[in-house]
Structure formats: structure tokens, C-alpha cells
Length: 145
View 1 (spheres, rainbow, N blue to C red):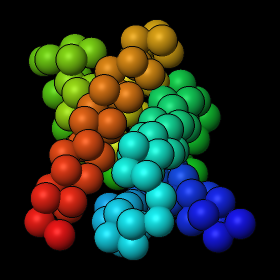
View 2 (cartoon, rainbow, N blue to C red):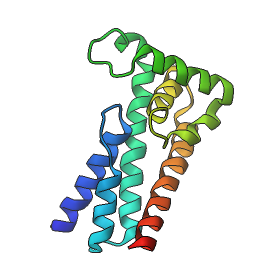
View 3 (tube, rainbow, N blue to C red):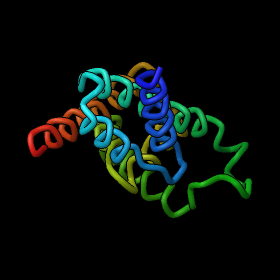
View 4 (cartoon, rainbow, N blue to C red):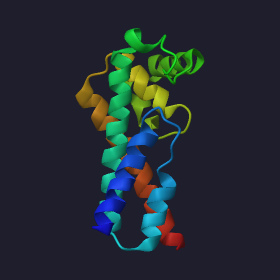
């Protein structure tokens, strides 16, 4: 039961971190890796799925941006949206490989929805980026522990 709760907590933190909420999942992953009670591959898998699904929420919000952009709760300032749109126009769907990056990553996933990137391509590129980040973080954590 404890392992299940830990995995649910990791999933929730990864989902929230990939959404437009100001959360971080890395400390949760590192803490669980250091505890050593759950296989690292499972932790990386759960974090990757949660983070990718959180980005998919951003993609959906992007598809709905015309309905939500003027709402007070909409968390992306116009400047960040414009900057991410510029990146996306310059690099196209490949810019989604930066979806793991702080500051620019979440707006990029939102812009992908605004610009109607197909969900299949979106999920593939975002999953590669986000899983890659967690693999590197897990490797570094376990190597230095």
C-alpha cells in the first residue's frame, strides 16, 4: 500500500509539474529513488506518464485558448505565449523536444494545441523529451548516491 501511495504521489506531482501549475516533480522522484523501495524503471515510467499527461492537458487548453485566454485564472501571460509561439513557428513540432525545459516547456505544449499539432505526434515527441529527462535524472541520482 505504501508503494502504491508513493507512486500515486509521484504521478500527481509529475502531472501537476507538466501542467501550467508551479510544481516540481524532480524532488519527489529523487527522494523515492534514494529510498530504494521501488524499482527505478517503475518510478521513471510513472513520472513520465504523469508528466506527459499533464502536458496533454496543456495541449487541450491550447486547443481551447480562444475560450480561456481572457480568464483571470489562465496562467500563461501573453508574453510567454508569444515567445513559445515564436519558438514553435521557427522549429515546428521538433520544438516539443524542449517540453522538458523549465520556463519554455509548458508554454510550448500549450502552443502546440493552439497551432493544432496532431495529438499523436504531440504525445510521441513530448513522451520522448520528458522520459529522457527522467532517465537522466534517475541515472545521475543513482550514480551519485
